[in-house]
Amino acid sequence: MSKVKQTGPYIWRFRVVVTCLMLVMGVITWRIIDLHVINRQFLQDQGDKRTVRYTEIAATRGIIFDRNGEPLAVSTPVKSFWGNPKELVEHKARWPELADTLGIKRKTLAKRILRSADKEFIYLRRHLTPKQGDKVTALDIPGVYVMDEFRRYYPASEVVAHLIGFTNIDGQGQEGIELAYSEWLDGKPGKVRLLKDRRGRLIEQAQSIKSAEPGKELMLSIDMRIQYYAYRALQDAVKENEADSGSVVVLDVTTGEVLAMVNNPSFNPNNRKGVKVSALRNRAVTDVFEPGSTMKAFTVAAALETGKYTPDTKIDVRPGYIMVGRKAVKDHRNYGVIDLTTVLTKSSNVGTTKIAQDIGVEQLWSLLSRVGLGEPTGVGFPGERSGSLPVHTKWRPVEIATLSYGYGLSTTPLQVAQAYMVLASGGIKRPVSLLKVDDPASVDAQQILPKKVAKQVVRMLTTVIEQGGTGTRAKVDSYSVAGKTGTVHKVGAHGYEEKKYMSIFAGMAPATNPRVVTVVMIDNPKAGKYYGGAVAAPIFSNVTAGALRMLGVPPDNMPTVAKQEAKPGIKNKS
Image (cartoon, rainbow, N blue to C red; front, side, top):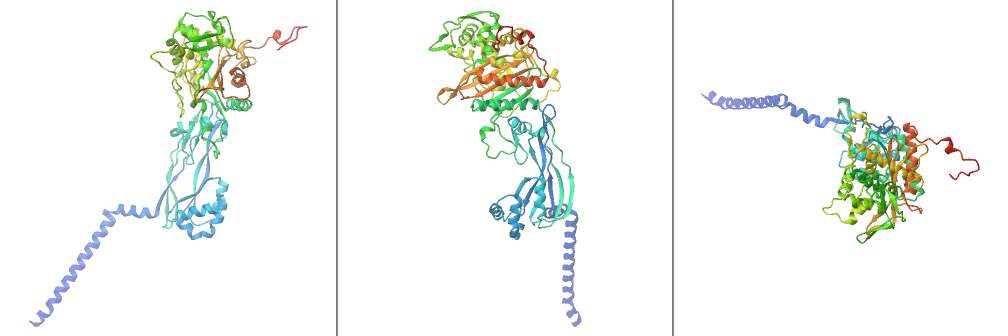
C-alpha cells in the first residue's frame, strides 16, 4: 500500500508534463502549418518588403517632328543621382568631393543631407550628362545611387519655343504642344525587381518585370524652313521698330495647316533660368487685340453679299468725316465720291461706316461670326483665347460704326489668319490645324461665303498693294498680293492710349490663286513709324516671299521686258 501511495503523485505529474509537451508540440505544429500553408503569402510579402525593391524604368517620350521630319523635341538619356542620408552621414569626409563632382555648393549639399538625416531618400542632382554621371559613379561613395532618366531637348530652341512648349524635370508637359498632347507623347514606364539588404545594398542583379514602352511620335504642320525665316524676319523687325513684341502666322490655304507661328521676344526652352513668365506665352493664340482696318475687307464682303453693292458702287465720303452721335468718324483726308474698291484702297473709315449703316449690323455681324471671329479656332492649343465679337440687343450707332472698321471686337493673330483664309479659298472655311494633314480631301470644308463675293474682295484687296494704296510695301517680287493694313490705338488702363499702337497686316499670295495667308502683328512700335503699311507690311513681304519660294509656288506676276527696261530718254523713277 505504501508503494502505491508514493508513486501516485509522480504518475500525475508525469501525465501533466506529457500533456503539456503534447499541447506545445500541437501549437508548434499548427503554427508551422499556419506559417507555411495558410499565411504563406502574407509572410512572403513581409519578407519582400524588407529585401525586394521595385524600380521603374523610365520610358522615352515621343519625338515631335515638323512636317518634313525634322525633330523639334527629343528625349536624351541622362543620369540622376539620389542618396540615402542615413548612410551618407557615416561618410561625412567624402561630402566635399561629392559636392564638387555633382557641381553643387558644399554647404548646400551638407544642409540637404543633415536636414534629411532621418530619411532614406533625397535627390542629389538630376539630369547630368552620361559623362558627368560616370565621374560621380567613379567616386564609389556609400549611400550614393544612380538612376537612368531622360531629359527633353529642343534642337530649334527659341525659334519654335512658344509652339512646342516644354516639360518639367519629370518629363510632364507644361506648355504648348507638350502639354496639349502630353498623353499621346507619354511613354509607359517599365519595372525591374531588385534584391537588397536592410542597408539598401544590392545583393542580386535586377530582373526585368515589364519593359518600358516609348511614347508615340507627333508630326506637326509646321515647316521649319518657313518657321526659321519668319522668326528671323520678325526678330529684326521688332528690334528695328523698337517694338514691345510681335507675332507672325502663316497658313496653307489649301489645307488649313499652320506653316509657321512665331513670336518675339522668345525664350530658350533648354535653359529657362531667369526667363520672365510673360515671355512664355504664345502671343499668336493667347493675346487679343482690336484688328482695326483689316476687318474692312469683311465689311465690304458683307455689302457685296447683300447684292446691293458691286465693286464699282459709288459712295460719297465727303467732307472726309461723318458725325455718328457725338463722335466724329474721320478719314485721313477728303476722298470725295469713291467706289467700293477705293474704300479698301484708301482704307476709308467714313466709307465702311456708311456701308454698315446701310446694310445693317446684323449682316456684318453674321459674316464676322461665320469666318470664325469670337470663337476658338479649334487647334486645341492650351490657353487659346476666343476673342470677343459683341452681341447687343440694341446696337448704338457708334457701335455699328466702330465695328465696321475693326474696333469694338477683339481677335488673335491666328483668328485673323483664319478669317482671311476664307477669302483666299473662295469663301470656303477650313479648320486650322497644327498637325500635318495627310489627306486634304478629308478636311471638313464649308462654303460660308459665295465664291463670287470672295473672289471680288480678293481682287479689290490687290489695289491696296498697288500705287496709291496703303500697303505698297507688302509687294512680293514676281507674285501678285492681296491684303489689308491695320493700325489701332492700344487699350490702356484709362482707355485708348494716345501714342501707343498696334501695327497689323493681313494678306495672301499669289492673289490669282492664293496658296498662303500671312498675318503680322507688331505691338507698340516706338521708332517713329507705327502705321501697318509702314511697319507690318514689309515683314509680310519678306516672310511671304520666303514661304512661296520654299513651297515651290510658281510666280504669277513676272515682270515683262517692257517693264524692266526704261524707255530711251526717260529716267526710270522706280
